[in-house]
Image (cartoon, rainbow, N blue to C red; front, side):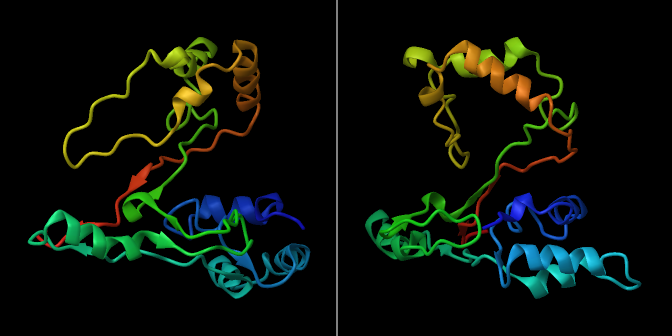
Length: 204
């Protein structure tokens, strides 16, 4: 089965024209027909007068399920708050579709929020194009042996969920190879808002 991000130029056209609010929505869409058929239809229609890319995508894909809308009631104590919030954060076992990795049991999504991957293309303004090889390697190795501690955050701020300590012990040669590969891909100008909090306080 062909992956959605292997469909060129459809994937690039959708992502670069930003018909969705973020770069993750399209990746998580589920095709209604085979990707080969959708790609064939796209090639046949994209240059016709009045062609609308967003309408084409919406006719060929099912959008991922949206969550959110929960509002914290600050007059409740912690126990009642957690009890009320737990079903909101719980996701049921998945079926494999789109880029979703199926899990066999219910699971909790921390914060009910969205976390987006950083731009690691070699774009100098919004990616890592200005990073040297040494800077890239040290970003990982500083966490080797658990010596680097997470940066403290203030109330209301959020800590990174990237498990840096798991990658801090990678071989320098492997990290240099990753850096060399990333330098070969196409630079994409895309400023990423890495965290989107969907849990809002009713006091706002």
